[in-house]
Length: 454
Image (cartoon, rainbow, N blue to C red; front, side):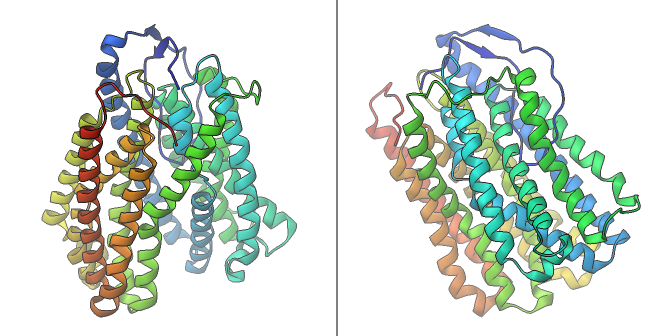
């Protein structure tokens, strides 16, 4: 899918949680193929910087929100609210259908095609997330749903609305990325963290658990709806399902492939903590959860940079991926974070107490997997740009198996240390496979060959 004849200056993208602000006019410059890759690299660096700062803001504001909530509200209320909030995130993950990835790849269509693709993706996302939310809510732990009034119609409607709103935010983020309006997503992230925090001290008009859940999930969800209405002014978006884009079939196939890939690559992230939970004592699981939470927040950076790479490389007419720039940024960040974890892991015991020493011991191993993960994430993005289905599924499938199969053996025998070893070993194996597939694609592909789609 070719890019149109101009590119917009200034960047777009962010993580999932964000509110929307108004924007000034887009600044356009003539599209110059000769400088295309140089511009792509510049936007890649700029977008990556905005994204990493946004992730830091999201992580810090989220941690502060739950820390204050734990001090102000009963532990039972916090537990129920956090369980429901985690459920929203899980349903979002299960119902994404690969649409954010596909939109990043195909959202540059000429003559309004990109906006029509966005509208189709939005409709599909709303339907899928609404159905998934209702099904999930009906089978979730009844003690958790008691926080929103049980399985009443109003409770189901509230949970579904929050899931749908958060799902919309994911696509709004990508649409802003396509317009390179990064600063507005960053502003949305900051606004969510700032606005909801003072409300923790307000007298709740409803039960404590419901109030916390609405604050935690409500603002990100509302930001998706507000962002959708603001896109016309911020990014010049025009919504409609007609005329039907010629690439809609390719978009759907690409989304399906990458939905499977997303499930595979994230299987380790979701399943490994469950393995630990059902295997080790509660005290050991608490230590693992602390170290795991830190690592997972930082591991979002390479994934986000990979998404930036997918957008910027997909919009160039040559289809040559600026993978070296993305890889350098991603590897540099994760190497720095890994060294920091080795040097100052003792901060965990300083903050949480001596009982969390096991967390300080496994954090360096969890974080050491960040460097191979940086390689894997940009390699997957490059394969997606090239429409290389075999490499995309091969890399992501390898990661899931290479982590979970050893974990099934090591966790029962070695506990959380075994989990950390499986995590590190699986990422090392996957990075090796990724590098081989990347080199092979460069050797086998004729010079100047364009990207294909599955």
